[in-house]
Amino acid sequence: MEVERTMTREIVTCRSEDSLEQAARRMRVHDVGGLPVVDGHGRLAGMLTDRDICMAALERGRPLGDITVREAMTHQVVTVEPGDSLVNAAERMGQFQVHRLPVVDDGGRPVGLLTLLDLARRAACGEMRASGDVGMDDVNLALVAIGRPWAGEEPSGPAHPHDPRRSRPVMPRRLRPRVPILRRCPW
Image 1 (tube, rainbow, N blue to C red):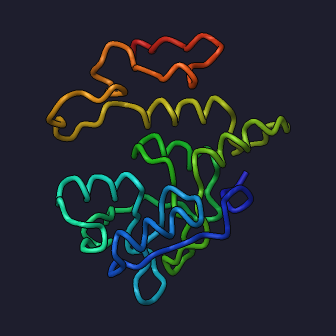
Image 2: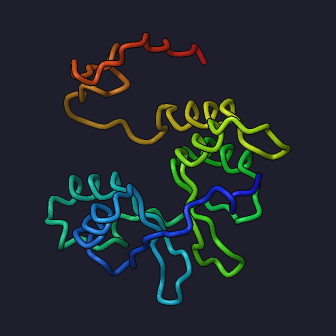
Protein backbone atom coordinates (compact mmCIF):
# COMPACT_ATOMS: atom_id res chain seq x y z
CA MET A 1 0.00 0.00 0.00
CA GLU A 2 1.27 3.43 -0.89
CA VAL A 3 1.57 6.41 1.45
CA GLU A 4 -0.66 8.43 -0.88
CA ARG A 5 -3.73 6.30 -0.07
CA THR A 6 -3.35 6.67 3.71
CA MET A 7 -1.87 10.14 4.30
CA THR A 8 -3.84 13.16 5.47
CA ARG A 9 -4.16 15.50 2.50
CA GLU A 10 -5.58 18.56 4.25
CA ILE A 11 -2.42 19.80 5.92
CA VAL A 12 -1.93 22.97 7.91
CA THR A 13 1.45 24.67 7.62
CA CYS A 14 3.29 27.62 9.10
CA ARG A 15 6.22 29.80 8.03
CA SER A 16 9.59 30.10 9.73
CA GLU A 17 9.05 33.81 10.45
CA ASP A 18 5.75 33.14 12.28
CA SER A 19 5.83 33.38 16.06
CA LEU A 20 5.44 30.28 18.20
CA GLU A 21 2.24 31.83 19.55
CA GLN A 22 0.78 31.94 16.03
CA ALA A 23 1.87 28.36 15.37
CA ALA A 24 0.47 27.12 18.69
CA ARG A 25 -2.88 28.79 17.98
CA ARG A 26 -2.95 27.16 14.54
CA MET A 27 -2.24 23.76 16.13
CA ARG A 28 -5.05 24.26 18.63
CA VAL A 29 -7.61 25.43 16.06
CA HIS A 30 -6.86 22.50 13.75
CA ASP A 31 -6.29 19.95 16.55
CA VAL A 32 -2.85 18.86 15.33
CA GLY A 33 0.42 18.20 17.15
CA GLY A 34 2.80 19.24 14.39
CA LEU A 35 3.05 21.66 11.49
CA PRO A 36 5.23 21.42 8.39
CA VAL A 37 7.15 24.68 8.01
CA VAL A 38 7.25 26.05 4.46
CA ASP A 39 9.42 28.70 2.82
CA GLY A 40 8.24 31.51 0.53
CA HIS A 41 8.00 29.09 -2.39
CA GLY A 42 5.89 26.55 -0.50
CA ARG A 43 8.76 24.07 -0.13
CA LEU A 44 9.31 22.20 3.12
CA ALA A 45 11.81 24.05 5.31
CA GLY A 46 11.29 22.28 8.63
CA MET A 47 8.86 20.69 11.05
CA LEU A 48 7.45 22.15 14.26
CA THR A 49 5.79 20.03 16.96
CA ASP A 50 3.97 20.95 20.13
CA ARG A 51 6.96 19.55 22.02
CA ASP A 52 9.31 21.88 20.10
CA ILE A 53 7.18 24.82 21.26
CA CYS A 54 7.28 23.67 24.90
CA MET A 55 11.04 23.12 24.89
CA ALA A 56 11.71 26.49 23.20
CA ALA A 57 9.57 28.27 25.80
CA LEU A 58 11.38 26.48 28.62
CA GLU A 59 14.88 27.04 27.25
CA ARG A 60 14.43 30.68 26.20
CA GLY A 61 12.21 31.91 29.00
CA ARG A 62 10.49 34.39 26.69
CA PRO A 63 6.82 34.75 25.67
CA LEU A 64 5.81 32.60 22.69
CA GLY A 65 5.01 35.76 20.73
CA ASP A 66 8.70 36.74 20.95
CA ILE A 67 10.10 33.44 19.65
CA THR A 68 10.04 32.60 15.94
CA VAL A 69 9.23 29.20 14.49
CA ARG A 70 12.74 29.20 12.95
CA GLU A 71 14.25 29.17 16.46
CA ALA A 72 12.34 26.09 17.55
CA MET A 73 11.70 24.01 14.42
CA THR A 74 13.52 20.91 13.32
CA HIS A 75 15.56 21.84 10.26
CA GLN A 76 16.58 18.33 9.16
CA VAL A 77 13.20 16.80 8.33
CA VAL A 78 12.60 13.13 7.56
CA THR A 79 10.09 12.83 4.72
CA VAL A 80 8.40 10.29 2.49
CA GLU A 81 7.00 10.52 -1.02
CA PRO A 82 3.44 9.66 -2.06
CA GLY A 83 4.56 6.48 -3.85
CA ASP A 84 6.56 5.09 -0.90
CA SER A 85 5.26 2.00 0.86
CA LEU A 86 3.65 2.22 4.28
CA VAL A 87 6.11 -0.36 5.59
CA ASN A 88 8.98 1.93 4.52
CA ALA A 89 7.25 4.86 6.22
CA ALA A 90 6.83 2.87 9.47
CA GLU A 91 10.51 1.91 9.36
CA ARG A 92 11.53 5.56 8.87
CA MET A 93 9.38 6.65 11.80
CA GLY A 94 11.10 4.10 14.01
CA GLN A 95 14.58 4.79 12.70
CA PHE A 96 14.32 8.54 13.22
CA GLN A 97 12.00 8.40 16.28
CA VAL A 98 9.25 10.60 14.82
CA HIS A 99 5.46 10.30 15.02
CA ARG A 100 4.79 12.23 11.79
CA LEU A 101 6.28 12.30 8.33
CA PRO A 102 5.61 15.10 5.87
CA VAL A 103 4.80 13.71 2.43
CA VAL A 104 6.52 15.79 -0.26
CA ASP A 105 6.28 15.96 -4.04
CA ASP A 106 9.25 16.05 -6.42
CA GLY A 107 9.61 19.80 -5.86
CA GLY A 108 9.88 19.41 -2.07
CA ARG A 109 6.40 20.82 -1.42
CA PRO A 110 4.31 19.15 1.28
CA VAL A 111 1.28 17.35 -0.20
CA GLY A 112 0.25 15.45 2.91
CA LEU A 113 1.19 14.22 6.35
CA LEU A 114 1.46 10.61 7.50
CA THR A 115 1.20 9.93 11.23
CA LEU A 116 1.69 6.88 13.39
CA LEU A 117 -2.05 7.01 14.05
CA ASP A 118 -2.72 6.86 10.29
CA LEU A 119 -0.61 3.70 10.13
CA ALA A 120 -2.34 2.14 13.13
CA ARG A 121 -5.79 2.86 11.65
CA ARG A 122 -4.74 1.36 8.34
CA ALA A 123 -3.29 -1.73 9.99
CA ALA A 124 -6.39 -2.22 12.15
CA CYS A 125 -8.86 -1.99 9.26
CA GLY A 126 -8.83 -5.78 8.94
CA GLU A 127 -8.27 -5.96 5.19
CA MET A 128 -6.06 -8.62 3.68
CA ARG A 129 -2.45 -7.50 3.87
CA ALA A 130 -1.05 -6.87 0.42
CA SER A 131 2.61 -6.57 -0.48
CA GLY A 132 3.96 -3.30 0.90
CA ASP A 133 0.94 -2.76 3.16
CA VAL A 134 1.42 -2.03 6.83
CA GLY A 135 0.45 -4.47 9.57
CA MET A 136 0.15 -4.15 13.32
CA ASP A 137 3.60 -5.70 13.68
CA ASP A 138 5.08 -2.81 11.63
CA VAL A 139 3.22 -0.26 13.73
CA ASN A 140 4.33 -1.95 16.96
CA LEU A 141 7.97 -2.00 15.86
CA ALA A 142 7.80 1.69 14.93
CA LEU A 143 6.23 2.58 18.27
CA VAL A 144 8.86 0.63 20.23
CA ALA A 145 11.65 2.31 18.26
CA ILE A 146 10.12 5.78 18.71
CA GLY A 147 9.95 5.16 22.45
CA ARG A 148 13.66 4.28 22.78
CA PRO A 149 15.51 6.50 25.23
CA TRP A 150 16.81 9.56 23.46
CA ALA A 151 20.58 9.67 23.03
CA GLY A 152 20.81 13.44 23.63
CA GLU A 153 21.70 15.32 26.78
CA GLU A 154 20.27 14.16 30.08
CA PRO A 155 17.56 16.54 31.30
CA SER A 156 18.27 18.32 34.56
CA GLY A 157 15.93 18.88 37.49
CA PRO A 158 13.55 16.56 39.29
CA ALA A 159 12.17 13.59 37.40
CA HIS A 160 8.68 14.06 36.01
CA PRO A 161 6.13 11.43 37.12
CA HIS A 162 6.22 9.94 33.60
CA ASP A 163 10.00 10.14 33.27
CA PRO A 164 11.35 6.84 31.87
CA ARG A 165 14.08 6.89 34.54
CA ARG A 166 11.44 6.19 37.20
CA SER A 167 10.80 2.58 38.07
CA ARG A 168 7.09 2.82 37.28
CA PRO A 169 5.14 5.68 35.69
CA VAL A 170 2.56 7.37 37.86
CA MET A 171 -0.81 7.44 36.14
CA PRO A 172 -3.87 9.25 37.49
CA ARG A 173 -6.46 6.73 38.73
CA ARG A 174 -9.09 7.84 36.19
CA LEU A 175 -6.69 7.14 33.32
CA ARG A 176 -5.51 3.75 34.49
CA PRO A 177 -6.43 1.04 32.01
CA ARG A 178 -8.70 -1.79 33.06
CA VAL A 179 -6.47 -4.30 31.32
CA PRO A 180 -2.96 -5.28 32.42
CA ILE A 181 -0.13 -3.17 31.02
CA LEU A 182 2.49 -5.11 29.07
CA ARG A 183 5.87 -5.17 30.79
CA ARG A 184 8.86 -3.65 29.04
CA CYS A 185 10.70 -5.90 26.66
CA PRO A 186 14.34 -6.56 27.58
CA TRP A 187 15.73 -5.14 24.32
